[in-house]
Length: 130
Ligand code: SF4
Ligand code: SF4
Image (cartoon, rainbow, N blue to C red):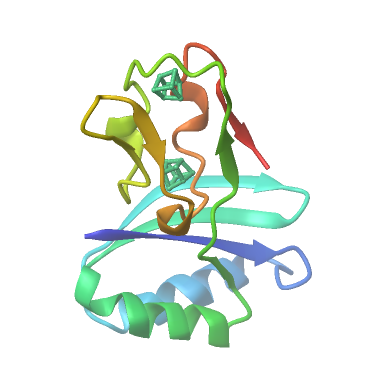
């Protein structure tokens, strides 16, 4: 399974049927999937979907056709006050946060999908949303 981080912009949401339509589009693939997180902010409704890896391309295309924004770029930075405790690593679904050979935290921006699951895990508040 792999994670898709997407946003339904407020302009696209008129009522609950808009959500149902998007979920029904995914159900057409006859797969099991999980909704890991649902939140709203000034951009719209943010949803983290856990879907089978071999379907990610077709599901992403389907979401885009329904005016859903699929976030593929990182949205966090790791600050210098990181103490390399590793608490954030297990929460990162894409291994964007990982240890190097010297057990120092490394952040691979290109792997980060901006799910923000790591934000609250840091005891030093060393991870910030950009
Ligand atoms: S936001 Fe954090 S947990 Fe999510 S992919 Fe990026 S580094 Fe990993
Ligand atoms: S949880 Fe915070 S302090 Fe610990 S490794 Fe991650 S960024 Fe660094």
